Amino acid sequence: MAASLRAEVLKCFRCLHRTRLKVFTNDQAAMDAARLKINSEFRKYQRISNQETIMELVKFGNQAEEILRTSVVQASPVAENTFRLQITTDTFMYNNTPYRG
Image 1 (cartoon, helix red, strand yellow):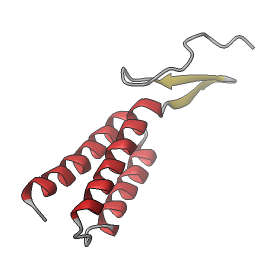
Image 2 (cartoon, one colour):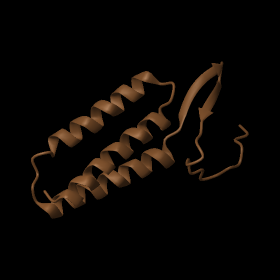
Image 3 (cartoon, rainbow, N blue to C red):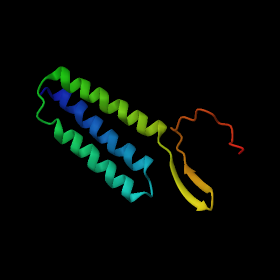
Image 4 (cartoon, rainbow, N blue to C red):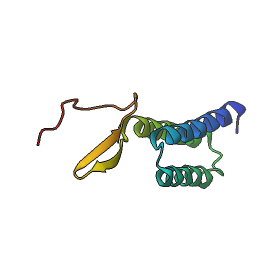
């Protein structure tokens, strides 16, 4: 594998882990599950040598990181029928209108 391609793979791997830590702050179970999933997916494909396939996998990893960073919101209960959302600056809000039920 070319050095620049290896660097791209490592960059994607590190970025996914940094995003995991940011998105799942204060949720150890989710952080552990995400860490195991990221590591297992990278291990599963570590023997791939075709550069085109590797670039496709890196592209897929970068897309997964973007979705994780912009779409995942953690919710924790604070009272009955009331939840606190952990929304980051990167979270994309489709509709910023409060829900009135």
